[in-house]
Length: 141
Image (cartoon, rainbow, N blue to C red; front, side, top):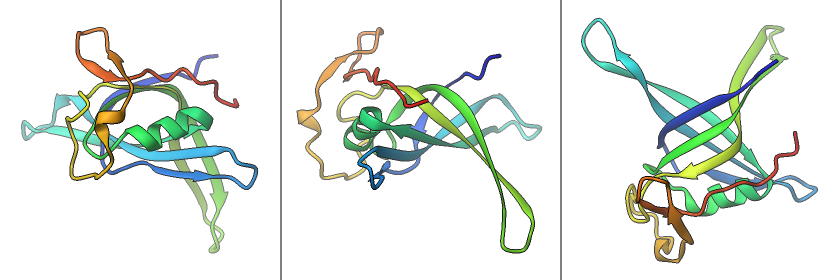
C-alpha cells in the first residue's frame, strides 16, 4: 500500500510551532497550492492544504518558514474522524510532512517578519537558487 503526497505551494501565514508536554515539537501551517487546470470561467483555483511536521523538522519549519515563502512538502495524507457534541461524525484531512524543502530565496516572500533571515543556513535547491538547508529529519511514524 502507498500513501504519498508531494506538494509545492506558498505558506498562507507563519507556521505555528508548539511543544507537547513530553517536549516533541509540532509545527502546523497551510500551503496554498494552485490546481493544474483552469475552471469554466478561465481562472486557476487554489487548494489550501493543512500541513503538520514533527520533531526537528517542525522546529526548522517554525524557525525558517514565513508567510508567502515557497516550499515543497513530501509526506503522507492523514484522515482524522471524531464525533462532535451534537453527535455528528466529523472528518479532517491533513498532510504529515516527512520532508520539507525551502524553495524561496532567503529574502523572497518576507512579509514583514522581523526575524533575521540573513542568519539562515543555505544551500541550493538543485536549480541554482540559494535556499535554506534541506530537512531530512526522521518522523515518529
